Amino acid sequence: MDLSIIIVSFNTMNITCECVKSVVKHTKGIYFEIIVVDNASRDDSVKVLRSLNIKNLRIIKNKKNIGFGSANNQGMKIAKGNFILLLNSDTKVYDNVIGKMVLWQKLHPEIGIASCALKNPDGTLQDSGGYFPTLVRVFSWMTIQDVPGVDNLIKPFHPMKSKSFMRGESFYKEEKELDWVTGAFFLMSKEVFEDVGFFDSDYFMYMEEVDYCYEAKKRGWRVYYLPSLSLTHIGGASGTRQTLVVGEYQGIKTFFKKHYSRWQYPLLRILLKIGSLGRIILFGIVEGKESASVYAKAFKAA
Image (tube, rainbow, N blue to C red):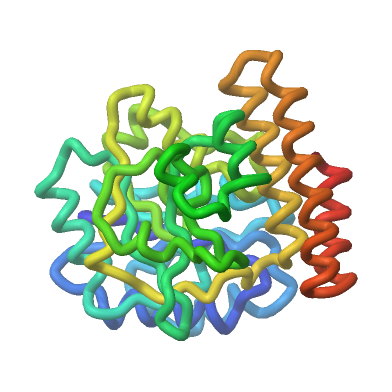
């Protein structure tokens, strides 16, 4: 078995089925299995997936939503492939991107984890990775990152600035080594999994892939971004903007607690609160009360 593709599903019946069908149709030249882990969806996801009658499709149905990382752990536990691909349910693949990525990684065994470019349905680029969050990088992210040239001085945790006049798309047009890549398309060798192990279950959703890359790089594995290959990622299908922002804040707090000195944690919280206050004001003016309320919740979570 060349590859095990793990897809976590939560109330995304239609797009999960479209994702699975696109994988089967557009993946060539490798022997693969698909493992869908359903996190207690309230729709007919499992029933409809079974009706597709796809060879080498295995389904795990959970009685409750155990989170993104823990659900992927279930899939990785039974994976048979020499490579493991974590793939978001709201993606569509074309042009044998998965087969080409596996072949590329076979030719570069020093690369433990890799991702391709993620594109919005309109073809614009999404953020697909970055550098590990440090106090300096979080400070930049929360305050001055939109200033031209700052990213050249401070490696960005999140290079893409979708709300800024400096969008940052150019960062994702070049092939490069990164600290972390997105869990929406997260390809790793079985050797990495055997070395690092499972995702940390302290992360419910968001930041678990950053933590995993951190552990992998500590062990000498390299993490790489390959924009010459791409897929479509809808984004946000299983959550809301509030879920994303609050979840990421909580994830960063967990990351700092786990990996950094204790004195850094209270400073991190101050930076997150400063950033939240600024966004409450800015997005409240530009986008209205709904956006302001998202960062009000984030302020409380910081």
